[in-house]
Length: 179
Image (cartoon, rainbow, N blue to C red; front, side, top):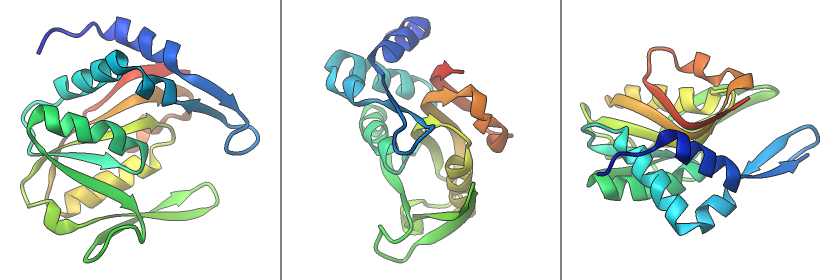
């Protein structure tokens, strides 16, 4: 794989993001990745950059739902299997579950444990690191299944929300960091 210009890629990603104020609710600035996905060369560059962070892995784990968009092609590039971490009730059983706190209430993520053999080396992929709750829950869930999480990679990290603090002890990478 050719060397990747991470600074140039970050600039390219940022230029392709569409900012949507007050979506899905008032006060939220949504980062729409659709223009990035529609740009074939940019999307390929992102997939290659994520794959380059992986090292030796057996599985690539995508977190619902936009993490799936990046995890699947990264798994193919790496010749690794693909595992999905989904919201509760989306996978046929048996499933392992992990609940986590939200600002108002809780949420749950699930995985089919038979897809994560004990000792599997995994790369976890998601689109945005915000508060870190979903990612932290996914990591706990995978570790309970016996996986060895090698790294977690995000397309975008929102620094102002300090999600990285939820992921202490993990190798965390983001292709683009925003305030």
